[in-house]
Length: 198
Image (cartoon, rainbow, N blue to C red; front, side, top):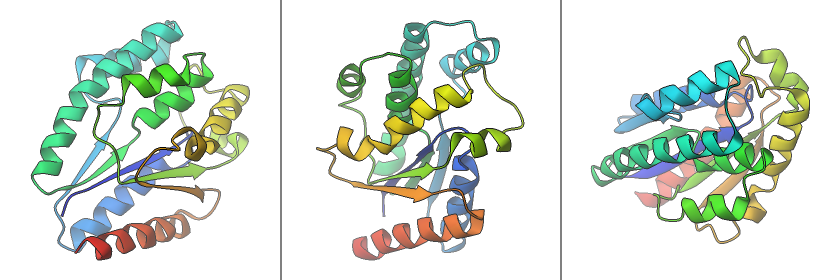
């Protein structure tokens, strides 16, 4: 079966950990699963990482790079879904709504620029206090400050309202807990969705 799952949240919320845990659970149960992340390894993704490390960018420059990187990744996602894979994606355009929205890019513009991309079946938003999240990070990019992440978190919590016409499932999960407990909540949600589709 094909299923498109996106895991979101501010840096330090545990997205990558939870994406890997879910991937392993599904693989063990015999599903065909692809685990992807954004930014990707494309030339645009590498440029994004470089700019974030150095702090040498404008909001517009960063936004345009994210869109270009995502357009390439969308083709990969579409192919995997056609082949019957469950796709788990660590960050998607929801991150752009939150992060670039907090940098001043209009959210309506972001939504319009991404309207023709593959839409997730499930969006999982891992919610955590920015102070706790920053304490988890070993390496920080230039924008990772408490004040900025508070603005990003506020937008993340508004995603159900921002995506009011979204046909899939949006769940906000408390990520300030043991990773196993968070993972169990995610697994129950995904398992129920898989059961309905089989």
